[in-house]
Length: 376
Image: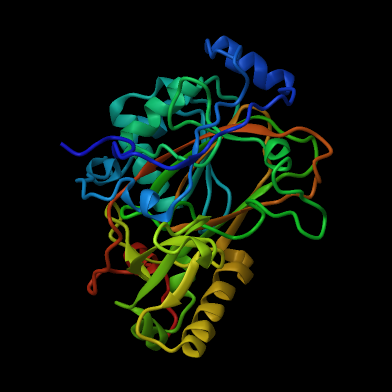
């Protein structure tokens, strides 16, 4: 049986330090209500792997993934009938559901939510009363919950990572000109053998002004390309790298290196059957089989298509106790740091790993499947 988190290998690690920052009041209330033990410090810091070879062994095995959205009622009757309101935020990406608590969803509603996320890319729920434990449980419905060996986590709840910019700023100083961190277009965990599917970020504390997050649609980015250009990139593969770098045990003086994986440049979502462009400026390194100059030119253009077409993006203003669930297979996202750390921001995140990315020549685009105008 394949392991469910980290292979039982002996890791050379960097020992963690104990954090002493003060938790925002609402964040502390939520954690204490959930019974999280804060007596030994917060968050829990796992020991960081030191060597590339150790990280490559983590989850380096095949596992079956059945996407819940693929078995859902296409009309989503159980989900929509229980909501007070369902609001599409833009024409192509982003939907908000009003009047439902994520912790109370039935199995049928979870499947239908999976399909809605696959179709609309990101779905939002405000005023959520959800504990880290319940967040992890929901994440398990959509795939194996990723236990990140590099980032802080909620004590006692493996796989629920802490998103706390004030904490990250103690390691990498941020400023107006170089906000760093998640303030760049990216998709999560592209270096995994089977990368991220649905991510659920719940923000319990947010700034009163600023701190928005943006998402862009991979379906629509693909459809922005001319049919002839799509033929050029269909079936091509690219090298994707990890966000963190490690030492090479066999060549420790060579400097930091990244985990790299080869995946399709255009992938197909198993629940919708639609093609999506799957590149991001932060972690896509090169197109396999092309010279560097050729690869750089094409990738630069593809990044721009994703990032510069505002009609295929949604910008979301957070309020306290809001959850966003998005699909990393069909989106990139970017967190605005325009509040510049002037007010606290804190949340918890769970990411479910999905299938190995695949391309299917006869798959349709989103516009073709929905009967929308297809420009030649």
